[in-house]
Amino acid sequence: MAYSDKIVDHFQNPRNVGSMDTASPKVGTGIVGAPECGDVMKLQIMVDDKQRIVDAKFKTFGCGSAIASSSLATEWIKGRTLDEAMELKNTDIVTELALPPVKIHCSVLAEDAVRAAIADVKKKMNGKQENAVAGAHAAAK
Amino acid sequence: MRMSPAPENSARRCPQCDAQLNNWIACDSCESLFDVDRPVTHFELFDLPQGFGIDHELLSRAYRKLARRVHPDRFADGSERDRELATRLSARLNEAFQTLRDPVRRADYLLTQLGGPTAAECREVPGSLLAEVMEIREKIEEAKSKGDSSSFEALHEAITARRDSTIHGIEALCAKLDGAPGETGRELRKLLNSMKYFDNLLSDLAGDPLSKSTVSVAP
Image (cartoon, rainbow over all chains, first blue to last red; front, side):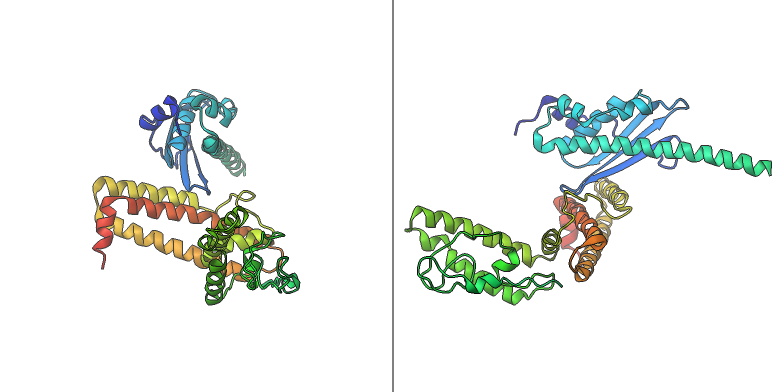
């Protein structure tokens, strides 16, 4: 099977490989997996006060297409707001990397990872607000 | 355990010689081969009751008997239909045997037979498995970069233990399967879904030359 130059490039020179502090309130972590192939993907985002993604990192243990998909996804979501990043579609990754049909699930995995990371950081932000409210209530009493 | 005998089986007769048929694919009397004329389960194929607990001795015996009947070598000089059928039936028999003899594949097959969920219908894994797998992956990476053989040893042991306990969990849930799988079926599928992760972790360890050398010096 012939792979596109873009897949090979992202596979050989993956962008944004690494980890961030999972415990940080500004960091959202998404860990997803594909049970049929056993691939696991961790994608993390760091947001600023305006909910803009200032940094993204990933670690993927899986096939070249899964690595390329997550590498591309981190590139794309950097600089976007959370709402904008939610618009990322796996089909965009498929088109950009010219993924073969059997590797489409790799792009789905990357999309799921982005969404999971966004959900995680949103949960943290909401929790913080609730804590702040709860704290305010406690202080009022 | 749900029993599913094949009552039609004993009443079926060979279209070639009219002898009573003892199985679904070949006549013991005139040695003709047949296409399976309705969807027959792997259990029915070997005339075993449908259920997780199987008699491995019976399974092997039934497999060997049928495999001899349909072996392509016997039909090398036969008609094109027979040669094609012998190849196809042999493949079907092998698939059925390999599925039933392996506890994980048998559990997967049984769950699907009983109505699922199938792997496509439920892609979940138990709770924190993915985070755990990611953590082990990172440890493997670290051990590889340091060339730390004792870590390899410990990781191999830990992953094997987790894999074994998952198989025990699969067996325990299968023993509870009765009729519609329901919530038990869902839990079972989650455990089945986690197997590929453990297998990949182990092959990642085994694929590393360092890990091979450390495994071989293990006591």
